[in-house]
Image (cartoon, rainbow over all chains, first blue to last red; front, side, top):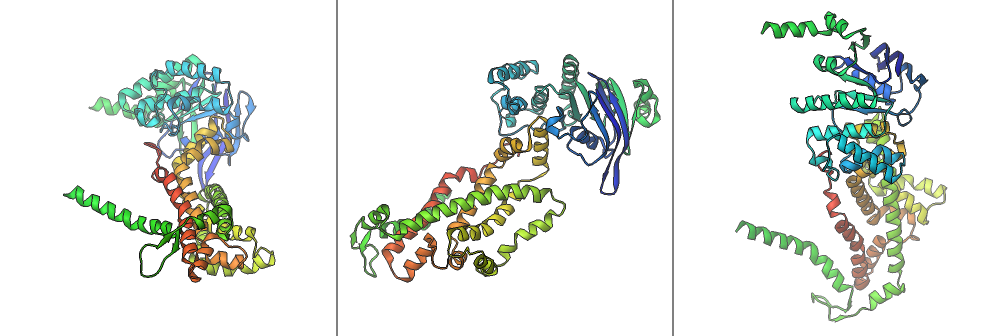
Length: 237
Length: 260
């Protein structure tokens, strides 16, 4: 379970996040929708420990992790770009988290091979990232994140750069795997439709302030979410 | 026709670069040579034998120069890479980077004159350690300048990904950043090696005649008109940079494919 209490962050003099509170239960996905510059990425970086100059507290499974360094949080960050390590093969990229944890070779091999099969990456193990398509790269990045069995997965518009059909495949795969593994996750997107589709719960981040909705319907009904605007646009065509 | 011209041009360029090297190699075997002959009258392996058995000071100077330059290059490259990261991420990175140009705004000799007092005060003049530090004061900022180009938004993101996957700062350095930067690191090593290897003015001032690197010896033999030893030492002077160049030719052009 993830809990944020009174998170505020300023960049220089400018406030980026103001008194953000949120809660995500174990195994749930919270979608955070917001336009560019609303503070979505900053929020994820704070949770990951990549930005630590902030006010407020971060709790993971009832344990405070506010001052912990990123490598001690078991919170994995997945961004829009796959950011695969170009000097490593697909297998080595996926195995990275286990390698730095010094997991036994046989165990590592079995886990990575299993995940490669689950993600439909058979036959690509020895390829280098440059030989992969955009969708395959994101699958590898997803596998690299899953292999460490994270307590929390942070997804920063991970499918935004993919074409429509690949994006839909990846969204489906993400939903299946996250539920199968019972992973708690924060899914950040500017896309209203994607936010509704991907999350078990939803929140809106606007001008650094976060509003977590009781239900999807409450989000849809809120004029600030922009759902009604979009709906009326399509109806007017 | 075009490809033939290209071939001739390549051969001419190769000859232009190769001739002095070959000629110096040949002259290092000369026993008797009189002006204006192009080729020596007599050849011998005597100078090389003396070099191998360590009978002449060239042997010592060559070894000293190799050890000195390799140490300077390794220290400057490692130190420069780490420092450049902190400079690139610093709020005043532009100002800090500007400071690294200081030794090059002055010439190395004037720079040596600048720091000479401190070296005398610390009793470093005339010692290998003093010359090492002197060379490092030139090579280290140069390494910083070269390595700064590596640090970008993308390298930062790669680092962040590795950290969230459980990799500590040093593991991230060793497993992610250094492999990504190997092209730039090899280039930096090569460049800083050359700075130290061919350094003359600063070495003369700080070495006060007691430290004779190969570069200093070449000048000495030339001024003494000792053409056989001058040829031998010049040949040796060109050898390590040539070996390094051949060794890292592919790395000079190295780029992590696709993503970098």
